[in-house]
Amino acid sequence: MKKSVFLVFLISIMLVCAGCSKTKVLTCTKTEDETGATLKETEKIKFNGSKVEDYEATIDVVIDEKYKSYKSTFVSYIEKGYKEYDEIKGVTLTTKETDDGVKITLKADVQKMSDTNLKKLDLEKKASYDKTKDARKKAGFTCK
Image: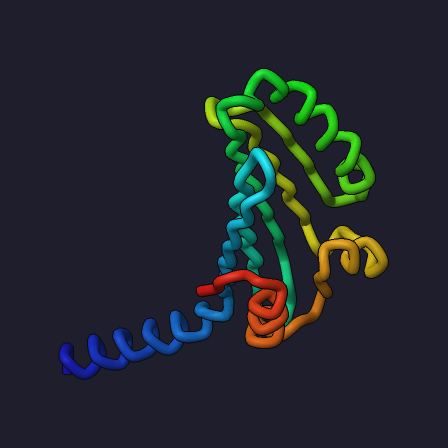
């Protein structure tokens, strides 16, 4: 009798936990070489079923040694270029100098953003994991 109760309890826990696995994170990376710098971009998109919850993009810019004295100028240039994102509700943008260059991080609470602003990030509030992955691959990313 105790074994039967334990078995039913164990199966119940497994069924409850099986429903908890709706959350997935799509991680995509891309590296681009520019004159004087290498850009390493990583995007993480968190899905809950077909609902996109969070988005985070990190761009590590590794600057060639001969241009490292211009890091602060580069940071200012980036901040001006990304200023529109920093003013969007639900978006946080940070830029900082690193030993190798500059790191840019953009975090977005997708559910707080308007559809118009989501299009700037090539996102939607409701999206298929697989279609989003395919779109990122077409944009040159490697995804897992």
